[in-house]
Image (cartoon, rainbow, N blue to C red):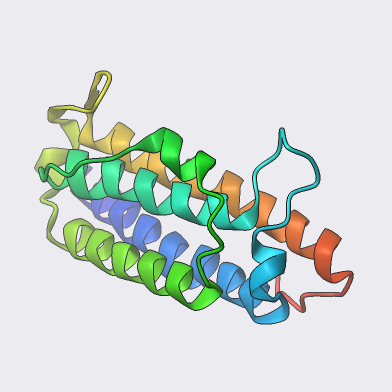
Length: 160
């Protein structure tokens, strides 16, 4: 089981750094700052809001729950933000959080995966926190890709 657990952690790290992050980076390369804050309607999120949300959720699940840290998060503000934070600032913030998350994942002992930890709302295993963070990041990366295609109207030239 240790080999599988190590593989799970390694693959989780890879999804963040080698799959999702390059796709998001590519989206921000083809959009302007104003495009990042465009939303199809008031009931939908902008790419900017999704980036803030990915930053907050990754920090909450990987750094705080799996890593044992404690940071303050205003989840609703991630969606309520309307100030047009630049693409560069949003990307730098997300890259910093993912670097911190990668450090946490790199030092997790496979035995810790079965430990119960408290999130802001429930007790979960470290395995669950990591698994949830990866799938959650994937879902919102897909939304960012779709919004970028809607806004840019071009092939993003992604390998997958």
